[in-house]
Length: 496
Image (cartoon, rainbow, N blue to C red):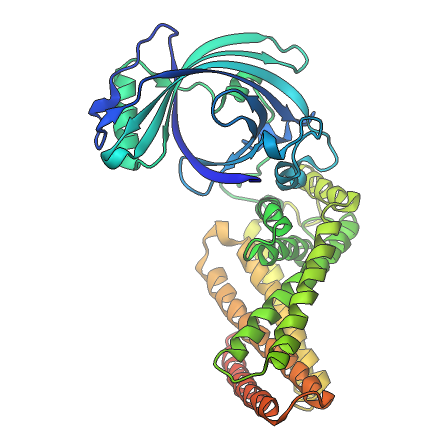
């Protein structure tokens, strides 16, 4: 059966232990309710010594009793008011094997080398009633809980309390809103803690999240931007581990943005003291880049072949080879992301955000730092375009110089993106042009890579006349695409 995942949307309330529950059968869409059933649930909750999961609003538990015994991981969800719950039943999690890999892997970017140990045990006497809609559909689950919790942390103690939970199954937001109103009228109070674990262990450390002052300094702006990209990297790490769509791309972008901030503002954060971190970020971006490039090329190959009468041999030569390359690149990325070196990199990023080494311009205004970064990037782009003009169009050196211009446009874009919290129009306008320049030159680079691969296939002599005709048609389309991207580049470059 393996791990299963669902989005959990629920209301949680504190109540007096003797408080009778209101009759919820009058809620909209509810036709009837099941007879209440009582279960005894016993759960052990796990976290690191630093409470890394609790800090990030996550819970990991091993629970017996009820209808869903096994391991449960709850994480924040993109859906408002909801959480993602992953469940691994005991049948797929041997008792002596510890935390299942399906739940351990998504947490590695947070736990790193720190072990997961029991932090609390919680026993719950739960009385469950299901609200039934038309055609016997279960709309929601209402649970009345009597809880006994013991913290296993130093100085922890035993607590007891009562709470109600109302969780949607097939019901909608209208039912949730009506239940909130009815339960509050019935004596329920807003929950004092987000979860049973949070109440059991008491206050937890909070994640360090930089904030901008009314008139931010350069250092405040840059550290805030670093924290944003750190959060993105951590958020996409689990997706890369399961090859989720776009996860490699987004994690690579976050890694590159972190490095770009360090290189783009070298006088705000001490460049010498962050040089090692910058090199480590470059290495990680490169590893992710191999997986991303093969992913992009595979998608491009499939689009180029669509509608073409290509033989199975040609399809395998284009797409099959790239699939193998992507698998190898992803395997290498997974190995790197499970290494102590990767975890040390994440630790270093956290330390940088918590205690950034100030450069000489750290206390200058945020706008002064952004203006300086933009001037520097524009100067580098102009130098690169001047050199491009001295090269023979279409030569390898000329194509490589276009790629250099693209990288410098990306750095300019990232500098203006860092200034987004300032909400200054001229920065947004410059960033939009830089993004457009980066995009068209990226498309040009992709066509060059594809045409080189087609030329290798033609030169191999492996294919018959029909496939050679297909290769010629695809190359002609790519040549036309390259001309369009060059025209777009010439139109955009003047705007900088």
